[in-house]
Amino acid sequence: MNSATIEPATPDTLPDLYALHPDATAAARLMETFRGRVERGEVTLSDTLILRTPRGVEGSVTFGAMPHPYVFPHLRADAPAAAVTAFLLEVRRRFQVMPERQLVLDSSRAAVGHGSVLAAGWVLDDTQVIYETDLTVARPAPDPHASEGGAELLAHAEIQSLLAALGRSALGHAEGHRRGWTLVALAAGADDAAPVALGAYGPAKPGYGGVDMIGVRPDRRGLGLGTRLHRHLLARLSDDHDRHGGVTAADNHAMRRIFEKSGSVHTGTQQYFRQP
Image 1: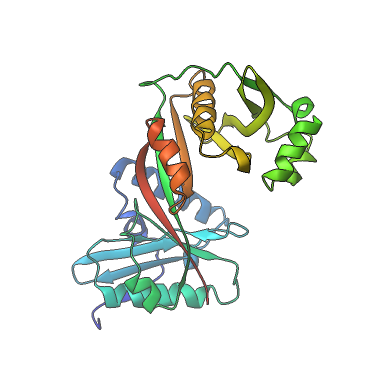
Image 2: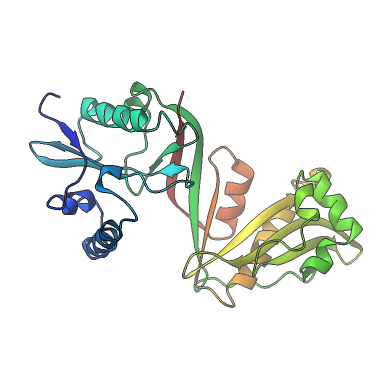
């Protein structure tokens, strides 16, 4: 452990900040973008940390600007546990005046686990799982019992009543859902036209579409309505997007089953840690 060092990047060691990025081309692009931000005074190298041992870079982190609350470190999967604990202790020390900030272990950047993080005094707050759907492979058909709209659909009394039952009343008072998104109300069938499930779809990050599974009425759950709604949302996304990325709590087994029934693939895990 005495051979480990923790220090901010310098102009000469800036490449080490991106040494653990899995894509060398993307890492070089990110480094040049960051270098430009430093030169323009938008960020300082003191907002970085690099963990090293004699074999090389073991971890790195860029704190970023507030109000973004999350910090995603890169850590080698086989980094010495004591060195990682010391590194995450230093991150905690940096956060003492920003108690709202959280540490996120993303499986694409660090091995997801508890030991070294808990030893550094962090408290596990939540675990999320990430799914992706290739919309070019399977294009589900829209559901014939789905209705779509914006503010006009949101204003219907039945929709507002359903939102209240789902604990999303705040959405019922908005003029719309999100900019560029479409609200979807799903009925059980032709003989039961009352809305029993709500969702929305629209653009997300570049190349991806997003969905919001607002929910299924509590007394109608377990009947496959969530799966029908999800497939309809993916069908609509497939008109303009090639991929969908979704996130849910690791213990939300119902939503995870919906993802799997829709052909979505579990691609990653994120653990959120708060300060004690």
